[in-house]
Amino acid sequence: MRIKKNDQVLVLSGRYRGKQSRVLKVDAASNTVKVEGVNIVKKHVRRSRRNPQGGMLTIEMPIPVSNVQLVCPVCGKRTRIGVRFAGDGSKFRVCKKCNADISQVSPAREKR
Image 1 (cartoon, rainbow, N blue to C red):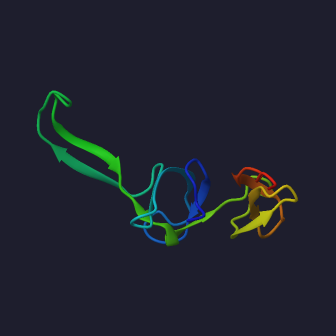
Image 2 (spheres, rainbow, N blue to C red):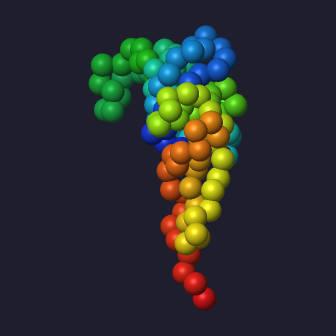
């Protein structure tokens, strides 16, 4: 999965289409992401030590990763993500539109 925690993403479909926000959590097993302020639902909870008041909580629920697209921090446009290997063997995520490095995925490899 190429979307990572704290990435800025744009929601492509659903009720929150067009909203740009930050990724809070990524679940690779179910191919979903939790995005800040997106897919908010009300959850009814009973009183407990953890929540002594009880009542209704508003929480973000996960959405499919196919419904979001990364926003490049350099050019500010929504983009697909590519991968580039540097000369020392380190791996970077790359913006397909402006060809800028987004983040490092893995460090340099040691030569054997």
